[in-house]
Image (cartoon, rainbow, N blue to C red; front, side, top):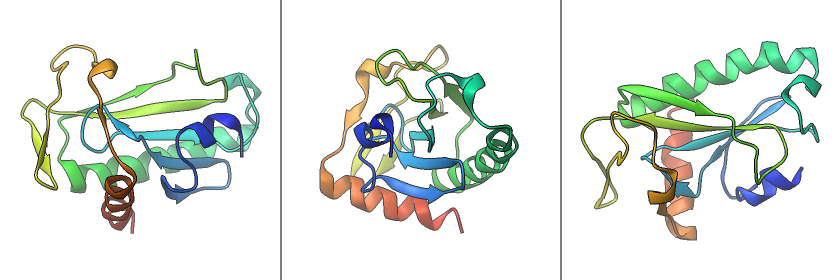
Length: 142
């Protein structure tokens, strides 16, 4: 796997695999259910992905939105392609909501609502919480 996928905790954060894409839990939860949609290959430019990856991306996004709608009942969803620190093609998937969501006894506010997401205020999960959240979100992909 590429270094970006590994930085986001693969394989412990893996939620769903596609031929060209991986859906990973974002260990630092900007909002509850924050994910990373990462290309599997070594591409560092979006335009360098194979044509098939673009077609499959539609399937990945559809699966993500259905699963997160069930899990967190988001009001909006943001896809951020930043690639400034982590060079391989990936999107941060941030479900957005106006009222905090509670999971496992903790509140997860959307600190930026209704403006841009506040990445610097993300809640960092420990390994146990990551494993549990991966399991719960994965159930919504079936």
